[in-house]
Length: 281
Image (cartoon, rainbow, N blue to C red; front, side):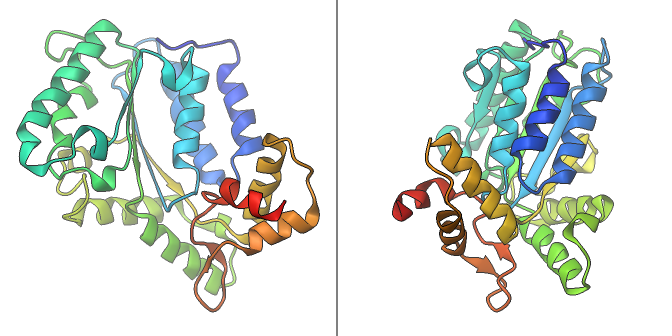
């Protein structure tokens, strides 16, 4: 169950501020959602967050950081459960069996410990219709299948909506505005529409979207060159290597950027930074 260490949420906020590069909206949304949820002894519903953005912008990093502050052992905790469509639900023809397995797995683990967390990775690769089997666990019902599940946490992680986020961020740049001026409400609408109407998305025509069961849609913005340099500096420190300005510049310059001509935002965020560093030492 939640470790709930003293000042844990404050420590998480500090960690996000120090180590999460270029994502003020993420810090704002995650901390707001977590604080509101943890302050209630009897929440009216589980906390449901959905992380959206392009590759390498920090979605998996933030989800793992969050459970590390809440659960002893972090991702290895017996109360933290991760699902990947390619690993757990690979075959479309078995979707009915997957639905039954998923419902039983969540029900069994929440019966064991109501304060559990469930992470669904790569929702953009999830078979449409599968995820709706967990709808009964996400709402404000007092009792589901004979148990109270309103203290659980569900996090969905997806690249879907990343294209819309990138386009809106580019539009701001073209209007000579800062990316931090982007409207959270506009992003939420664009992301919801994109994932709900995309037949390839795990949220396609999903009741989870339609019934507004997601409490916080968390948009991860594309990263600029100076953000990538911050990632390089951080990674050099983690690898115990000397932080040399020439290496920082060369690694950041070696990453592809978009649009093709202006090269404003990293195409892979900070995802390939760690693997590129060895080429410059």
